[in-house]
Image (cartoon, rainbow, N blue to C red):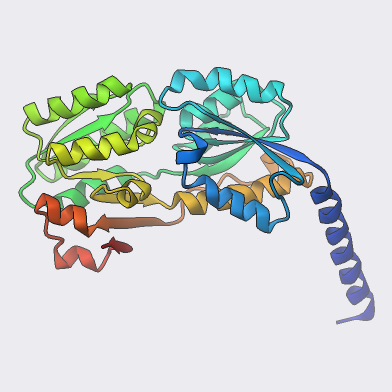
Amino acid sequence: MRRRDFIAGLAGAAWCSLARAQTTSRHFRIGMLDTSPRQRNANFGALEEALRELGYVEGQNLTFEYRSADGGNERFAALAGELVRLDVDVIVTRGTPAALAARAASTTVPVVMAAAGDPLAIARSPERPARNMTGFGAAARGIEAKRVAILKELIPRVARITALMNLSNPSRQAEWSEIEAGARALGVEAQVLDTRTLADIGRSFDAASRLRADALVVGSDTVMQANQGHVIELAAAHHLPAIYTFRDYVDAGGLASYGVSLPALYRQAAAYVDRILQGAKPDALPIEPPAKFELVINLKTATALGVVVPNTLLTSIDELIQ
């Protein structure tokens, strides 16, 4: 290496160190727009930890303004407006309704979508690109059909499946179409129950039993996430095997999940938050599709439901919870 290049490299490293020292010596406010209350959001810890590793410590140079719709997507608009009025430095969202609310609330406050169904459609639509938004996708084409195929492999006798989904969420309509097509390809009958409120959850489980469903596909949405324990309890009470989008359901006692790792996405979101707080423009940060999906099965729940995990599936399981 030439001496001039070496000195230039040292100068660049020193400048980066100085910039980070100046950044982390300021006090920042991060707005959170999430589906679950902070005390019940296990994934939020991954964001906190990643930010701490980057030098942002709550109570020292960082304040979280955490807002949750707690089961009601209609609440996101008001919550997003509240965060904008608080003049937060950046908003981190989970889910499509939260991202859409943040988009409508401001064209200037930076927004990082920690997990959204189709973040490109939200932030980079040709008609009206949102230059203050970036983030990460939580869904991919074919993922819903894959969940149906996993259910069929877990329970070969499955002839009817029921999807519990909040069809007011723009992401769920496309997902239901994929579930229906995937089931049809396997010779399985599929039906959807529109589940938008806490009261709808109980009614949907009762209806699934009346319709003689053999298994469930539970969509990811604010109402499901906010009432996760209730959903899992009802699945057990109705003796209905269910597959979920994210592994936190399986950690809490659900049968199986196939989807992206939310803690990994929240850690990636922290890296984007850091870059924005150091001066990067959101539209200069690429919107990333999901890179890896994980299959997690709760063996205790499988045993309680009389489900035997086949050897053909064991090789593709990322984690078997005992």
